[in-house]
Image (cartoon, rainbow, N blue to C red; front, side):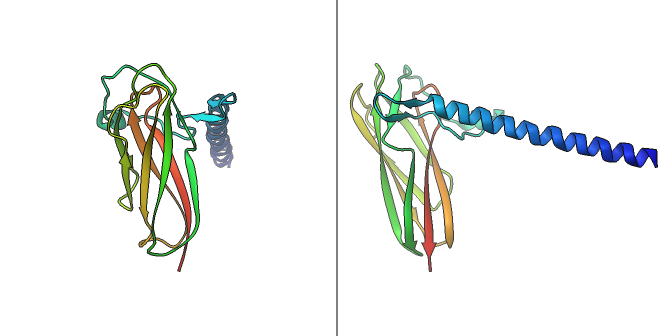
Length: 171
């Protein structure tokens, strides 16, 4: 009987520690998100606010840039298409501004699934200039609410930059 109670008590304590760890990670992510807003310009820094931890496996496949680092701002990093009909092919253009002192080079944009195709400014974006990243979404395979993303690899400190969009797919 004592063994059973001990096992139950340890299980409860273990579960409590795991759930606290998740809350602390979410709180830390929220703190980072608050620090990246440029209130003077009203633009958001491109550091991802909900980026997954980089594992050794992820780091090995991420494109490496040999360009000097720069900083950027997005007009937005999340877009809502609202209600669209199943089978619609929609797109959204995310405007990116080079706010740093070195040319911005976007080396790759990797969508999270095959339903999303990227286009982006291929030539270097000079300081103070703007470029575009367009995400094309094919809703044929989806129903209801969806959220998709693409990772933008560029010569910025906190790459990849995560762009997201949502849509409510109607029959």
